[in-house]
Image (cartoon, rainbow, N blue to C red; front, side, top):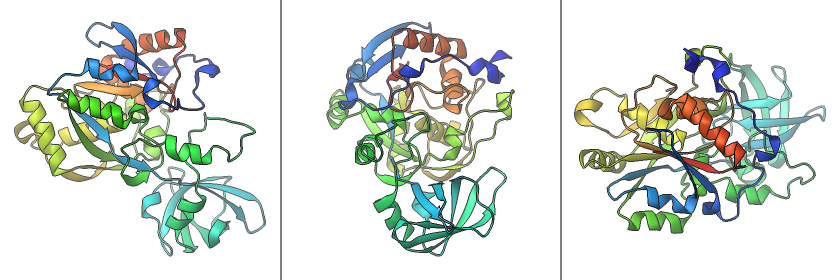
Length: 353
């Protein structure tokens, strides 16, 4: 089937359409509305999103918070090292942490970070991670003081150095972020403002929150020619009792569950895949998921999706294709490119109904 071929998830994107900065007014991003029943497209702005929601609907937000998990250090010989910590909320002095290192370091070698934190290379994993033993300063304090936001590699702003560091700490974060744990933002949520959320609530739309801490697995690219062979790395997620109750009330009353971002989809569909869902509905849960959603997936929970424009060969693009159909998603992307929408993390958004 073409929809399972890696080559079916390619498209040509002019480099100038890759957003390097967000809009200062978050909700002024553009919004491409896709009706998945017939492929019809409408052009709007994100501030218009309440017009497409109905009283009784339930908007699901991922309240995870991005940790400034990228640290720059030096080898004992003086060479520079970049470390992206993959479990930043769990780090502690004397413990271990998973990281992606640039460049490669051999076992036993030591990295010296600002503030007195030292890390020795303890082991390697089959998936390319380095296990570091942490000593000296508190890693949490080190990240708070010296860590950089883990912006995607396609955001390139040469010559600006650290001038945008504080800017990114604010703008590469949703306004409702609460719980530390992610190494990438749930970017569909970056467009919301407190005022817009108030307008949505005033219309009779319930807003609830889940947690899925975005890890390396979310943005690790597809590489198998048969995408069904791809394995997601586990990520932690949570549904609270209050959220489970609100979601069940929405379903029972005929409302739509509208997921904000592919991470919210993964949390919801993971919960809907648990034993007993068909009889009991959503139940509180805290654990891990490795769900990979691609064409052929039968959605049990999500009725509409707010999402950004995703990279070729990415798991979020496969998920959007599973939800709306690959051909319709790629046709929508073609229209977005034609109309010069801004792509990827700091770019514009889609609403798929």
